[in-house]
Image 1 (cartoon, helix red, strand yellow):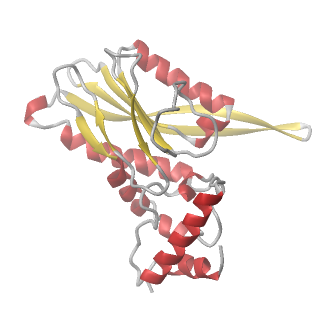
Image 2 (cartoon, helix red, strand yellow):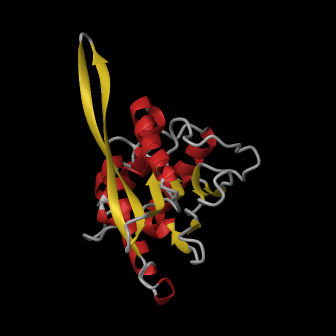
Image 3 (cartoon, helix red, strand yellow):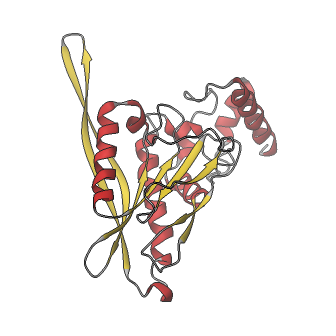
Length: 252
């Protein structure tokens, strides 16, 4: 990651205008600790604003409402003879019926702590099990490279993937609808289920990501002059180096 990238990092904001992420899909720098909480907040907010008008059309007769929920948990880490406690809050979306407030679909965005810490994993699964017990559809959006997957299903026959969206419909709890993407591709569109008889809502994750990147001001925040912390594949690192150099040249 040479001087070209350092120049690119300085030039990503041109004439006061915010630039889009240089990546075609997920930006791997966003999952780093200093960026993720802000990114998750803006990403969930972007999904909220994408979903709301689609749930208000004539066919659905305004039967639904979207709300932002939050889980909170504490992570304890030993430091010499003391314990450091970190408070974490993670937002997710709930689609509910307007009439009685019944949960229809849970849309959860996996965080790095959910995949790397037992406390985060437990908090994630508590909300998912509660939603399943309520008879809800379940959507998991996993844009995190690090850590272990939260859902236990065979991935052997999937296309090449770095990121996954997994949909479980309440009337087919053993069936997983899986949408894949890689670091080199745009994020997928997926079908979000509602009540039986209502058509699915098609959600474009790339639009949500682009909005959250801009609204979070990440072009100003991210140092593209160094490799991302959680990209370890030599093939990916070589591609990333070439991408940033090409983007730098095109913006000169």
